[in-house]
Length: 236
Image (cartoon, rainbow, N blue to C red; front, side, top):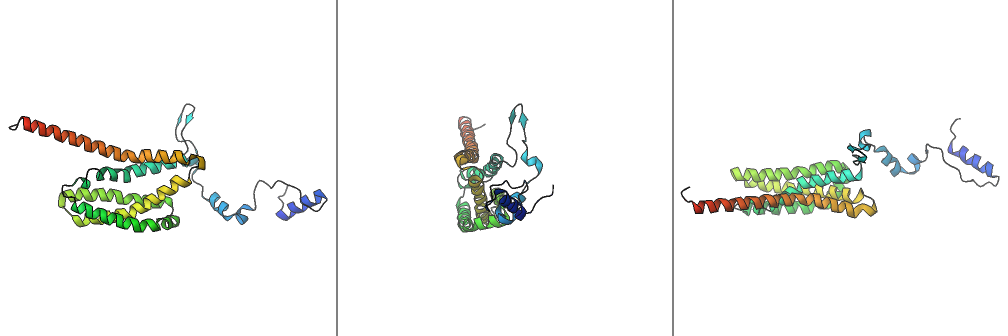
């Protein structure tokens, strides 16, 4: 049977009622109105990933993990990005002055960091809308490892300029990263699941600071043990 145009469907429905008023009728399986009348819906249908993204990644007995493109998996991925980037930044900052004996240059770097953070954070939403959340998140994570690398470089050559530049760049990247993170955490889950998603994110994210604190604690305890050994045996 050949498919009918919308006008033909409407005409048949009107004739079948005998009153000139269309009866309720079921639209054909292929909705010919979607692309014309609902541009947003048509755009959503155009964004479709690979087939493997919609299949469980792990199966253990009857248990199946969420599929890759599910809100749960995407939130966990973003959470671990923040665990490895801002979380480890918090861990380094918890050492006090980035672990440096002279904290003046690190303080100057932090000043540059939050100055650029405040400016870029205001425009980060527009940037994310233009380039997409995936690229925004990727660019946001770049500044964190460069900042940690600048601290390592500062230990070797005392290059304060590189440290301050890395801090300013981290402010730019941090504004982008937190914008993308907020968009994923607030828009992906359903309304009644947002509290759970927020809790999962902050648990994973703050593990970075926990690990950093444990490293600092273990380092301090080892340092105290070494000092006690030296005091007990100065000649040793």
